[in-house]
Image 1 (cartoon, rainbow, N blue to C red):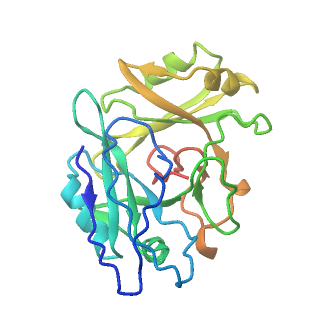
Image 2 (image 1 turned 135 degrees about the vertical axis):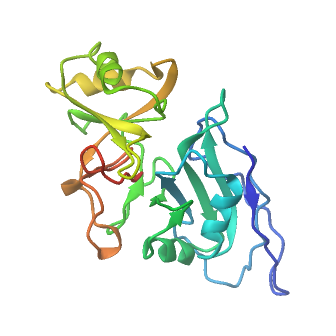
Length: 261
């Protein structure tokens, strides 16, 4: 997967200082190389804001160039990548973009972003292990949090031809399934590559989380606990988009818009 770089020109008052390698937020297929770290102005205020975003709901036809160009209008893009299946090279329906300044992230969150004639979901990304800040919707891994209990999980990276029956059948190996939903594009009815499973009983989700890899219809998928939106802080003071989120996507029923938290 190719990764785009944004140009970074230091001012005269800046001195060159290479930052340590940033933690890689996603270790899935399609990750590319990091571009070089920007120079740092030692006298300037430190920007500790979130600069990386998760972008969900991408079309399978979205190219790296389209992805990069879509976000360049909001600020200087340092790094961008569309996550792809390691065997087919087809987009997995999501990606990551990193800006030079955190202000660009706010610009994105205050806008409705469209790529390849499709509205996409944009969420802030936070390194694992960092506490979420109030008033934000963030990418946080909660799958190993022993204090967090839920009957619902997000499942990402589904093969686009996975049926609801096959989806449900796989997770019935862990317990009785109350509901299985594959999120679909409301315009064409095609799978968006992710869905939700709700189990009948407590504790089943923990069994699912104990396993590091899950393969549905021959394709490895990602499983995360789903957090009720009521337990999440609204993004930027505005109304939340979607009913569920947290450690995965959020969505509204079978045709809702998804967003990675």
